[in-house]
Length: 167
Image 1 (cartoon, rainbow, N blue to C red):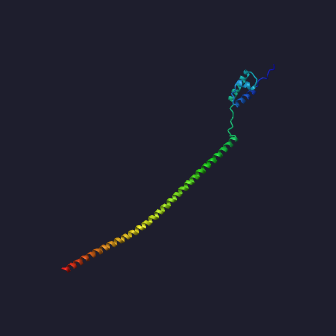
Image 2: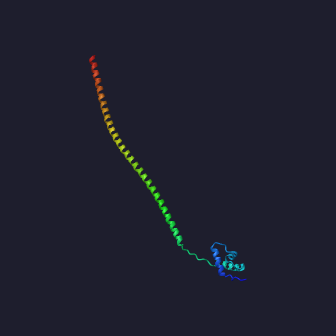
Image 3: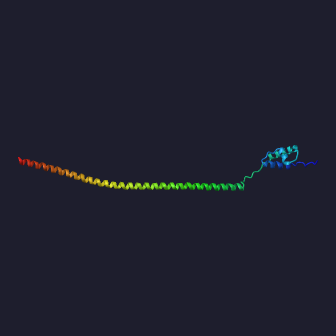
């Protein structure tokens, strides 16, 4: 029987890292299956070393955003800006429409007010003219009343004279 070569710790570490990167749980059995050889005692020993070595090494993170993510954000941002512009244009159009309608109503109200003012001025002129006519007619009535009193006095005088001559 041929004996397989001894399990190298670096080989086990690489396999454990690969399994972990694939999202699999790293256990002695999963390593045995992935390696295809080795004893569980040796695998347990190296697995403990791998676990303790991992906790000491803190992976350095690259704080820069990958270009693909930057490009994706740029695309999303452009689309959002386009949509915001479209919505703003729609609102602006509606505001312009409503503003035009309000201005139209305002001008209609102004025209109605001007018409009413012209009618009021015309009616005021008619009223003034009627007042003048009334004043003239009242003066004429007063003159006619004076004339009536005078005529009544003349009639009374004439009646007296007629009576005095009959006797």
